[in-house]
Amino acid sequence: MRDEEEATDGPPDPQLHPERSPGFGEEPVGLDDIEVDRDVTIGEASLEDLAASDTEPVEDEGVADLLTTLAGDDAVERRRAALALAEREYDGDESERVVRALSSAATTDDDDEVRQFAVEAVAKLGGAVAAKTAVHCTDDDDPWVRAEAVVALDRLDRVAHEETIVAALDDEHHAARRNALISLFKRRGEDALDELIEAAADPSERVREWAAHLLGGVDDERATETLTRLAADDDESDIVRKTAARAREVDAGSFRRQFSGALDERDRTLPGEDDLNRTPNL
Image (cartoon, rainbow, N blue to C red; front, side, top):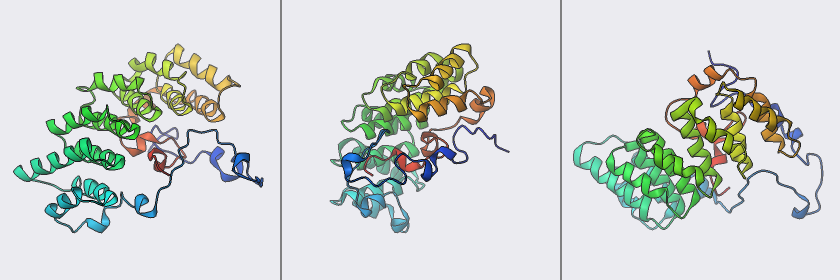
């Protein structure tokens, strides 16, 4: 049986019910009348873009065909091929060929999301080339590639790559900082307290929200004081205050035991959220 206060998933937050959404029932005259308080990126994703992570259309394709697609002209198909290649099992030379193809895509493709999908895929296959690729991608120009690279390093070996992951706490983008913070908590547990307290004052609401969530796993007076301050701060966002209030009620030991294993999409969502929160172009 799982605890009610689940570390990685859980029942929907009643505060997320549509009728509690800001502006519910109102009829704004135009876009200027709509206020957005969250870290939101609005893009122009096509239906093809949204379906790029669905590998079912290519599940019967051979490895050679997928490698050809990965080097092709269609960016959406390259994204799908990268993920599909990570779902196969390989032997010997074939494995090396696939890993090197994914590494090349992760470091040289001109499409940001192909690089993001490729670094995710190569990390699932593992090995020295995958690790070198992920470290390289922590310096990528695109923030979502960098954020995914942190996840890749966590998956590969968060202990061996702790220094690189810690460096990502200073990344200019909130997603990379958030993923680094989660990985560091998985690595250090309560010994990540100093970093969690610092993240509780991060410029990004998203990072502060996660810092509050993770502080629930630290049985320390400073953690409690930080959560109490966040929960009572009238200048803080509603979601951070509520997350801090819930975190104060969590059993720290149970939280830490449940919050383990490789970083994946579920680890980057809070109770009541959707995995699509991690994608950049929605």
